[in-house]
Image 1 (cartoon, rainbow, N blue to C red):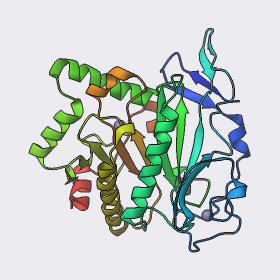
Image 2 (cartoon, helix red, strand yellow):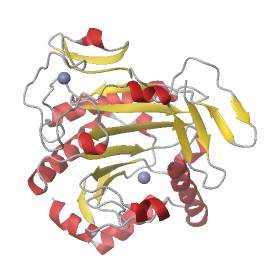
Image 3 (tube, rainbow, N blue to C red):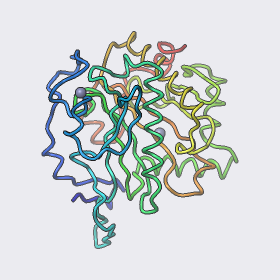
Length: 325
Ligand SMILES: [Zn+2]
Ligand SMILES: [Zn+2]
């Protein structure tokens, strides 16, 4: 069982998950060595090795074979099988109640975001939506975290391309701060902060990478990571309501962005993560979901850990110029 503890000083939460240490590190490769074979015998996420995983939660099949599938994480950060009990003693803590699933991005062991087709991204986003909708349909759950690690430097322990989804009984501090700032802005200006940022960035025309009908791709003004990119949904609809047309549109954006990233950097470690509405009703009008893409070329130093202030060695304007299409 894991436990969530929240610091009285910073409001920052930590999940104490002792069992995670038992997970095997299957990815022995270095960061820039990519997988060659479409199938690996000892990989639990490869087609034919389904019995090496826990219970399946979703799959899409083509020609009677699965192409994407999800299952419970064998070494979860958080587990669902006990009562949610908040213990308010001196320190703030609660049981780590929630669900942790692994989403296999593609049946191809050697597949990754730098070589996936637009159709493969569509299948992936369809799975993201399905798992998201399923996990958020629980009143004890306050937030769903959907994210991906690619290669060792980004935190990936398995070589086979996969994403993860975790439902949480708390709203993480970073998300809560974003949502609260958006709420204050909306109350003062009667439009979302994202809407205003988009209008400003169109006028400034220095950090926009691409704009489509329903999404805008930016190098954020105050990017804390070098090479950071955001894809912002222009409307304030919730992620669980994303239409199949919008899935097509964002899949094409991913295809083009990662093709471009391959040209600029080659295949590199990265994280992507969704920032979406917490699981309460009234936040829909003032928040726009968005996806952060963070290349992990550099590690953080002591200054970042000491102060929470990041040093970014590449200007967002330069990133926008490099990636614009
Ligand atoms: Zn595999
Ligand atoms: Zn965000």
